Image (cartoon, rainbow, N blue to C red; front, side, top):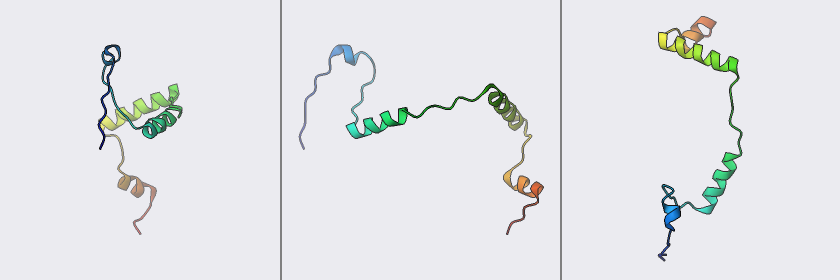
Length: 75
């Protein structure tokens, strides 16, 4: 196994944590960054807020309860 010595300039080292990553892994990360992040609409954010509040209050059904309410039977 070969060992190499690398000198890191102080200006770069002072920027924070440094990482050594294989090129293939770095390139796959760059491809992942191209995926557009989903931004919910105002109505979706309000709905999510309402759902979280209901969950906190205990106003929800379990999957088993939902299946029972809908008339599904375990086959």
